[in-house]
Amino acid sequence: MRRKSVEHDECPMSQAAEDIGDAWTILILRNLFNGMNRFDDLQKHLEIPTNTLTDRLKHLCEHGILTRKKDEDDGRRVTYRLTPKGGDLYPILIALAQWGENWQPSPKGKRLHLLTKATGEPIAKVRVTDQNGRPLKPKDVVPTPGPAATERAKKLYSKSW
Amino acid sequence: MRRKSVEHDECPMSQAAEDIGDAWTILILRNLFNGMNRFDDLQKHLEIPTNTLTDRLKHLCEHGILTRKKDEDDGRRVTYRLTPKGGDLYPILIALAQWGENWQPSPKGKRLHLLTKATGEPIAKVRVTDQNGRPLKPKDVVPTPGPAATERAKKLYSKSW
DNA sequence: CGGTATCCCATTTGATACTG
DNA sequence: CAGTATCAAATGGGATACCG
Figure 1 (cartoon, rainbow over the protein chains, first blue to last red):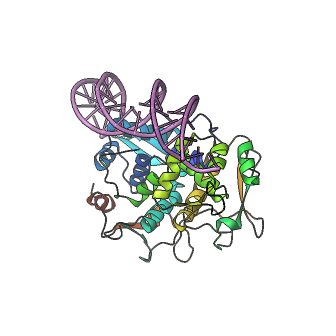
Figure 2 (spheres, rainbow over the protein chains, first blue to last red):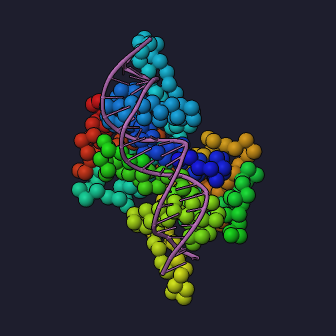
Figure 3 (cartoon, rainbow over the protein chains, first blue to last red):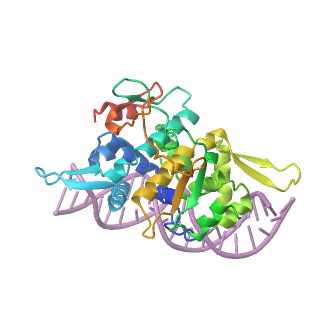
């Protein structure tokens, strides 16, 4: 989406969404987290047009979420890998998966189980907590504008609209 | 985004992203979590075109994320509120905010602090954990297709591509 | 107040073909 | 293998005007 009226760096939330909120991008990241890291594996598995895949990969590389490296043995071969910044998207993807599975269930049952490798138990639900691990609801959290907050953000959080 | 080749209910992750991944939608949800629940407050604060706002609100209502209720006193007045399904998006929004603040910092400093109301301390970083609260990395988690998984998903998670 | 209805235009999508 | 090039078609964005 291209917007005129909303400054680009206004909100860390929507800025993040702009970078990864696209559905193709989410699918690509999902596959990368599962170890699929070559152009044509992605293309075949997702059935994504090659130019769209190029576009998304380029965008992810430019934003430091992926690295693109040529294989040293085979110069034609390219590998995409998650950077630390990319790897840190993991909680977001898992939270999306849990929400989707929970609230938009398939009539046929579960699509995806996320199990702890060590024990085989399901992982915990991703939550917002305080430093001691106590769950927090929206009303328990105070969003406070920092020095780089826009006027708009300050307005929102001061509730003087 | 409209796609042809990817079945609509394939992946809970990308399906969730389709529902809320749009940047306007994220901004609207953010404002709703902050208690802004009227059409024209949203419109003025976000400077979003009215038809786009209508579109996003309708979509969110149709997907059970918001309710639209007319004020009993003033029949002209309408209020949008988060449903439980909508409220459960909170961890996703917070995770997006934390990632954006962390990895796409503004040169001027922090834009948003998220503080625990009870203590004033920053909230914890949203993480993926096991049932005992121990942090899990992608390699510690086994994604397992459930009964409703598509062939494509099974293929991905079996790594036989 | 809370929207609809139009309109136009920039962008994006996906198909197809081609290349180093 | 990993893309580029091209292109027609769809779509979505935003401005403006209007309505119950």
